[in-house]
Amino acid sequence: MKKRNLMSLLALGLISGATLAACGSSDSDTSSDSATKSSTSDDKFSVVMVTDVGGVDDKSFNQSAWEGMQEWGEENNKEEGTEGFKYLQSNEDSEFVTNLNSAVQAKFDLVFGIGYKLKEAMTDVSGQNEDQHFVIIDDMIESPNVASVLFKDHEAAFLAGVAAAESTESGQIGFIGGQESDVISRFEAGFVAGVKEIKPEIDVKVEYVGSFGDAARGKQLAAAMYSSGIDIIYQAAGDSGNGVFSEAKDLMNADDSKKLWVIGVDRDQNDEGKFDTGNLTLASTLKGVGAAVKDISNEALAGNFAGGEVVNYGLAEGGVDLTDGNLTDEVKEKVAEYKQKVIDGEIEVPQKP
Image (cartoon, rainbow, N blue to C red; front, side, top):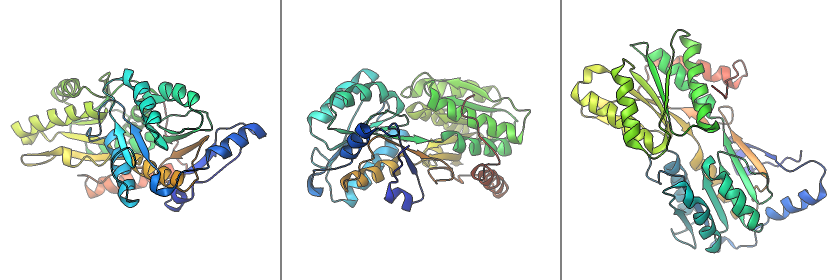
């Protein structure tokens, strides 16, 4: 396969690139090459992101992407708007196609789809607009005008499992996912594997909200878990995960001797764990969505759009990780030990439950 590296990303040690185009096809090579050329001057180059359900204030996936775009705008003297950078809010799945078409009609140079749920809509819209550049986050679309970004979520989740198993006092641990999918299954699989690596006798309780935008349901599931004796919940649920934090804080404010914990997702969610007398965020798995948005935007601005390529972020590339949060020194040492084992290939973390 034809390979191409994104220089700024490699400089950060974050990602490696590989084309999705078939080998030896002169037609696909030509179309892919043409998709990397930008005819827009720097001062007019504009980018937009279409959110998944949850909004740019979800304190998780969408917010991380938006913060990366804002950083890109600030670094390139861009203003929020159609001539700089902007987001289009999706309140439900049915709005994906409309928002993507609106982005194309507004003549943004680069259009991001934030989340695997946009794949079908972006496949359709990108196929109808072959001269438009698109980026799909958390999935792949095989097209010369689409760059695809994937993350090895299961590797960071594995470290979260190690931390949870080393930190639990009750010996009971839970996982709450947003909407069932291959992506969230990677979180579940990695987390359970990490727990089992340390304490094989623990059976992780797994529940799914069925949505990334239902904090009330997330709170309800968390309440049931905590009442059953679970003392640590890892949530990979977008805005629904805010309900998990809300329930844990309510319980801790009522009785802080309970020692309940939440493990955050996608960005450092330490602030979300603050309650009256302390902080209940045990740690957070990090996902470099913002860095991906910023760096791919910079590459496209420089005329090096990664059309037809997939870039993959893992522990070895520095694209996913686990924060120290409120882990003890002993647990941090154990996490570092297992992080190196994953990077060295001594442990292969499963991607499916």
